[in-house]
Length: 430
Image 1: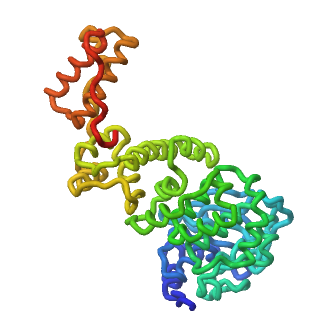
Image 2: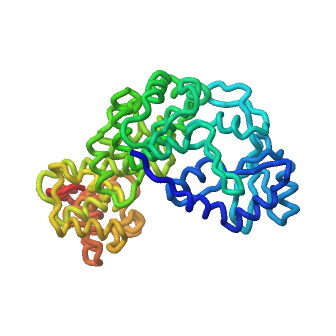
Image 3: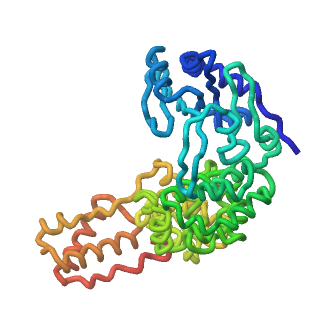
């Protein structure tokens, strides 16, 4: 079943005043400049167009000259690759001279400038990414992209195996674009080529793999596509284990907005070592790794809770693992037998997550204990640990009276005059 394409939306994109200025600056009877790629695809699907890319027969130096003469700002962001960013009233447009591949090695391509839009389209990855529109509003399709777009089909241009050999990242892009634009099963030829080329993933930088995987996980069809990747042995090469497809599917159905890091947690994190493995294998950022590590702790605490959780348990949970990770874990685990949150606990967790309720902070500081006579060292650490256990047992109070009691307990434990035993964190997660 085909879907209608939104040609009025495409024409509206073409008519944007800033874009019109750029096209006018590059216009010449012997040259041609067109909108290409994702902007054309997304406009035809009726989606918002974020970035507009242009392809031109003009050489980069000529693009720079003409843009400057028209009062626009040319930025030579990639002259060696034929790309100039032309800024019109603060909005950037990437203008790239037509190219032709001379040789490829699966990671990089050697190219030369060309003048043939059909040849430039033929070097792109998928038919839906090879559409272009000229300033007169004519859509150009030399590879069958319009039919594939209408059919929700992601298909390689030419022979799929050859296209993947040119750049092994196209294996992941095939799945990512199908998760975003495709429907039903992936294109059989593309799937077979992706499976055959799976060893080529090891040649890619982990940063490139991370970027594609997170974009894939954010796509609407991520649960179905990751299931295909797991069945064909490709997913395990990326996450280093078996993905929890059920959790990912339930999370995707429950989320208000897709969150790729939370989806990665649902798919691949059950413990702290999982977060460490993903940090290394995907070159995660410090913030992404910290989030997964905190999620792992919150998930273990929640999943291990046998009794229904009450507000005091939630205070312990967010104090120990953070409001965001605790909310992430609760959303991922929703629909499983554990945990069970009372309505009051669920409401409190939501208030912590959106900032309406401040996260409780342990009120005892080591400096204050030293000032009160405790000596730095093991005794001080013992005192702080005893006070923290008591604080968690009490539901993480932060009032002045609680602070005074906890400081007294910490000093006693630090001096060896207290038993240092302050409960077992209650019955809920900590």
